[in-house]
Length: 83
Length: 177
Image 1: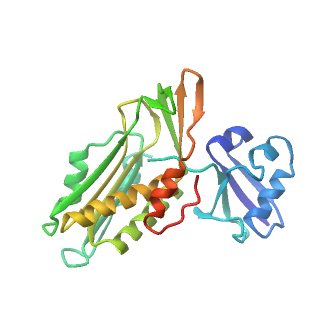
Image 2: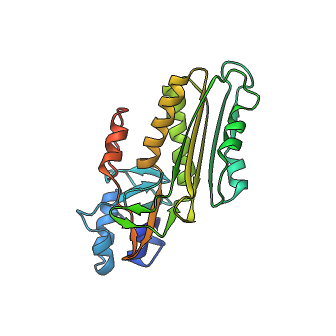
C-alpha cells in the first residue's frame, strides 16, 4: 500500500526532505519506521531506535502499534516544543 | 496561515442558552492583541463572570545562551485539530463558557508574543484551571517546534520533562519529552 509520510523540524532537516510517498507492506507505524531506518545513511540516523521520535497518523498522535491503512498520512517528528 | 484560517476555526454553539459556548483557534504569523481577543471571547455573553488569560513571550535567554531570534514551525492541519481536541477536553472537564487559543508561527524575536490562551466562565476558579490545563496540554501535544538562534548558531529547542509532569497533574500521560 501507498503511505504519505511527512517530516518536521529537526528530522525534516536531517533527512533533507519534508515528505515521501512510500510503498510498504508494514502493518504498523513502528514497522514502517524500521523500514525507513533500514534505508541507512541519514534515515538510519534521524529515525534510529533510541532517538526521541514521535509519530502521528492522519494528524493524531499515535504510538508504534498504530495500524497503517492505504492512503494514510503518517508523520514523524521530534518531541513538540510549542507554547 | 493568516486570519482566514482563524475565521474558519471559529465555532459557536447553542445560542444564549445553557449550552452556549465559544471556541476559537488561530495559528498565524501576525501578532495578537490581548484586549481584542478577550473582548471577542466575552462579546454578547452576559453569563461570563470571569476571564483568565495566559500570554507566552520570547525570552532573550534559554539554556544559558542569549537568544537572538526564534523560528516556530508547525504541522498545518494537525495543529488546529489537536488544539480543538484539547478544547473539547477542557469543555468536558471544566464548567467554562469559552476558550480562545492564538499561536504564532514563523520568525519571532525576544519580547514578541508567542501564544495566548484565554478562557471564560461564570466563576474564576474554572477559568484559572482550564487556562492552565490548556497551556499544559498545548506544550506537550500540539505540533509546534522552536528553533532558536544563539551566538553558537541555530539549535532546536529540547522538550522538557517538566512539561510532561505538568500535564500528568491532570491525569494525562504525555509521552512527549
